[in-house]
Structures are given as C-alpha cells and as structure tokens.
Length: 404
Image (cartoon, rainbow, N blue to C red; front, side, top):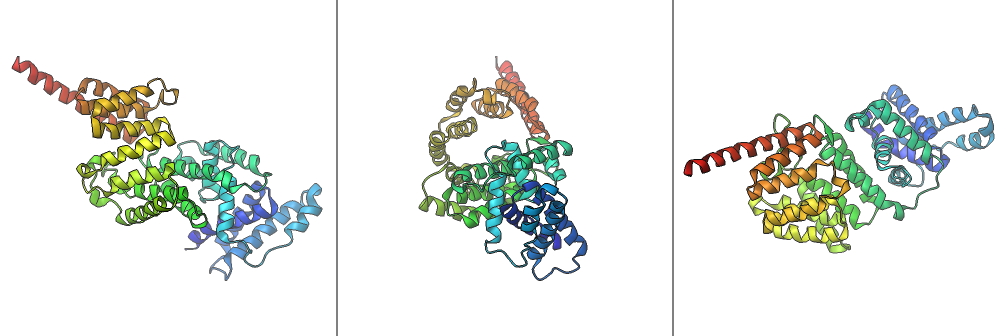
C-alpha cells in the first residue's frame, strides 16, 4: 500500500534533510508537505519514491527559505542542490540518526517519547495524544517545544545516547502494553511502533542490550492476546490461556536472548528478557522456574536498583520462600517517595497479603490500589479482587463462629 510505503520512507527522508540542512522543524514541515503531495499525485509508485520525496521536500524548503531575506543566499544555494538519486548513506542510517536526535538528553522523557513517535514512528499528533490520554493541543505544544529545542544541535554521539534511546523505546512499549490511563488495557499501536523502532536500532548496532530489549519486547508482547477477556478485562499471567501466546514471537525472542547471553556482558535488559523467557517457557503456572527467576532478580536489583524491580523481586521471593518474606521486602519501599501515590505497591502488597491468608488487609490494599490507578481495566480488576477477598473473609469468619 502507498500509505505503508510513505510511513516507511518518511523518517528516512526527514533524517537526510535534518542531517544536511539542520532546522528540524522546517524540515519536518517540508516532508509532511511532500507526503501529502505524494498521496494526491501518485496513481502508481514512481521508480525511486524516496528520491521523489526528497526532491519535493527540498523544493518546499527552497520556497520557504527564498522568502526569508536574511537567509536567502546561504540556504537557497544549499537547498537548490537537489539530490536525484539515493544518498550514499543508507536509509537505515538516516532513520537511526533521526531517532537519536529525537532522544536528545536535554528533552524530558515525555517529550522524547512524543517526538520519537511523531518524527520516526509516523504517528499523527492526534494519535499520540489519544494514546497518552491528553488533549491534542497539549501534545502539539509538547512536540513543537521539543522540535524548537533540538533544531540547532550538532550530530549526536551515538554511544553516549544509546541508553537514552533504549529507555525511550522501553517507555513507549510499556505504555502500549499497559496503558497508564483510559478505558483500554493496552495500545497495539504503541507496542508495534516500539518493536519496529527497536528492530531498526538492532539491525544497525552490534549491542547486547539492544538485542535484549528487542527480545524482552517480543517475549512480553507474545502474551498480549491472552491478557484481556472478551470484555476487555485484565487477565493476570497465572490465569491466562497460554495456547493464545504467540509462538513465533516467543521463538524469536528466545533466540535473541540466548545469543545475547552467550556473546555480551550481562545488562539490565538482558536480565529482564531472560526472566520473560522463563515465564514464556512454562507450559503451566506451576512449571515456572521461580528459583531461577529469583536469582535473576537478585542480580538485577544489584545492577539496576529501583522500586519497580523491588516489587517484582518481592513477588519472586514470595513464590520461592513464602509471602512473608516478600512482604518484608515490600516494607522497605513504604517510605519511598517515588511510590507514594503509585498503585502498584498496594497492588503487589494486596496480592502477597492474600497469599499469606490475611484477607482483611488484602481487601483494604486492593481498594487503595483501585483508587490510585487511572486505568479502567486495572480499576475493575483490583476492585473485583477486593470484593473477592471480602467474600472469602466473611465465609471463613462465619465458619469459624459456627465451630465455636
């Protein structure tokens, strides 16, 4: 389809123009006009569609710069040197440079994510705003400010910026896999974009953490169809129909992580992907290799300590040594300001309290978690768990009274 081809070519053309002329904002406007012209004029795809788009976009820049008196001589001269053949640098090189540009460390993480999805992912401002549940005008302002901030920076140092790029891709995937707010649990648009962009980086970089992040995304995304019921309700990992898991993604992700573990030093994404692989390998919840998962979380906690790692570490510890040990680990997070208003601490605490048989405390923790999340499917799931704990507690207390 022409639309799919244009989406593929857009970041390549934009990356080339930004590399040659700078001025991110002006180049993006010119590319958007060229894409619009192509969608109207192309009845058939030309022999060299990328060169066509570059030529039209460059002419748009020329027209714009001719109207600016102070820049006429320098920029008109550069812009009239129109490329008519494929540039010497590869398409992927320009796309990757554009991705690294969008992940400039001076930008806030939300701005990095938004600009990456807009310029490299090809999403419209409206689509990005919808995915993140903010008004389109707000998202437009965020993207505009980000473009203005990076328009005159020099070409980035790839090695220094790679961790930032991977973090942005990780954020995009996580927001797509479990939306932070709204009526839907997940956004396939965002997870697909994150996987596609990570494949782009992986194709051009010999890096273990890049391969591991791609593996983590594939191994996690493989469970997507089993995570929700017909009504869109959340289904936890232990209750999922594992026949719905995507075997092709599991196979590809497993190969990637096995190769990364055999060739590269251990890194945080490698550890997370290895944990995901152990979950995906288990035919039933009872077959999960929790002792090995616990070992990996211990290593990850030392390498990349943060509250979310601790939450998952506590679950693994509970599955191996019992919920009391997991609850003791969670207690270390009670004073952590980063989780003060976050629902996941209460959600994990409720789960472990339920495992320990303290249904009254579990009921209260589930309710607190349900009130704090802005995701409607999570709200419903947590509220249902709270009700279930209350029901079981009532039945248990009633039975106890009858025996006395």
